[in-house]
Length: 246
Image (spheres, one colour):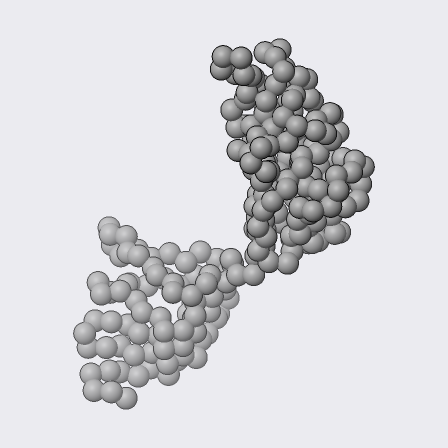
């Protein structure tokens, strides 16, 4: 033990569950409380945070909320490692070529995402297969691994042949079914593009559609047109992304 420090062999946290932690703790003379090992809590840990702060040399693992407050003044909590809840999550971002797309624009066609970036192994993106309708591998489709929750967003900047036009699109399974076919509690919205005239060009802004889904089997998903009146193209400003969130 160093000079100016006090060693404590056990901390008992009385939180209803009777959790106990055997940890080495130092109460330093300069006002710091230093924990030199792991802090794990299934309930809550409540206490006074010194003015100088609370230092943890190991990991903090919590199934609930980690919060810091001292009197009327909020204190900051800094974690130098990767939070456990965000580790090993997958992500994909997708777009279209610089000149946009002007084919396969009918109802039940899906958006041809032709470029992008994937992180992790739970989401796969198809940027190379020849475009095909129906189910199966096709340019612009994504594959989700089961028993994980995904947030999906897509936005299209559409071009139209005239002012009396409209386009609707939404996330579906690869065969065009509603996402509730693979997750009864799935949530999905519809993106609606309407033309705004700029001289002789009729183009939309960038409305988006969103979905939350937790498939129970390996599932292909796509962004599908459910209305395509007067639709002539969608531009390189269009994008999609899928984030694994749970």
